[in-house]
Image 1 (cartoon, rainbow, N blue to C red):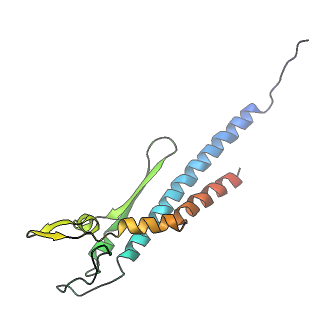
Image 2 (cartoon, rainbow, N blue to C red; image 1 turned 90 degrees about the vertical axis):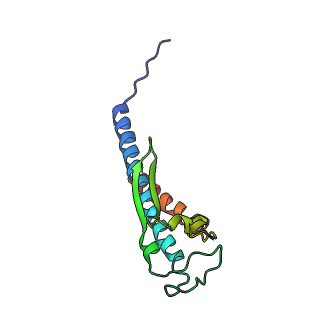
Image 3 (tube, rainbow, N blue to C red; image 1 turned 180 degrees about the horizontal axis):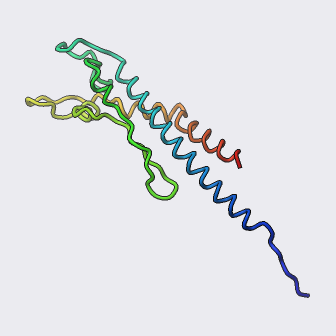
Amino acid sequence: MSGAVQIVGLSQFNAQMIALERSIQRATRIATAHAAHLAEAAIKEMLTTSSHPKGTPTPSAPGDPPSLVTGTLRRSIKVVGPVPVGWGRWLAEVGPTAVYGRVQELGGPAGRGSELPPRPYVQPAYERLVTTGQIWTVYHHAWRTALAAH
C-alpha cells in the first residue's frame, strides 16, 4: 500500500508564525519600556521619603534612601532604551546621571576623607516592583494582548 500526504496551508501557517513572532517582539520592546518607566517612577518616589534644607545634617539613617535637598539626584534618574540585545531580548537601563548617585546607593569615599554610608534607593525600588508583581504584570499583559491578536 502506498500513500501520500499532502500538507495544505503551510505557507499561510509560516506567515502567521512570522507575524506572531514580530508581534511578540514588539510587545516585549513596549513592555520593557513600560517596566523601565515604572522603575524610574519608583526610584524617584524613594528619593522623596525625607528632605532637609541645604547645609543641614541629613535625617536619613544609613540604609535608608538619601534625603531630598535640591532635587538634583531625583531629576537625574533617566531611562535609556530599550535596545535589542540579541534575538528576542531587550535592555533598558534606569538610574542616576548625577555624579554622586552611585556613592549614595552603595556608600564609599565622599571627599575630604569622609566615608558615606550606603543609602540605597535604586535596588529597593526595583525589589518592590518585583515583589509586588508589577514588572511581571507589565510583561504578562503585553504578551497576552499580542497573542490574542493572532
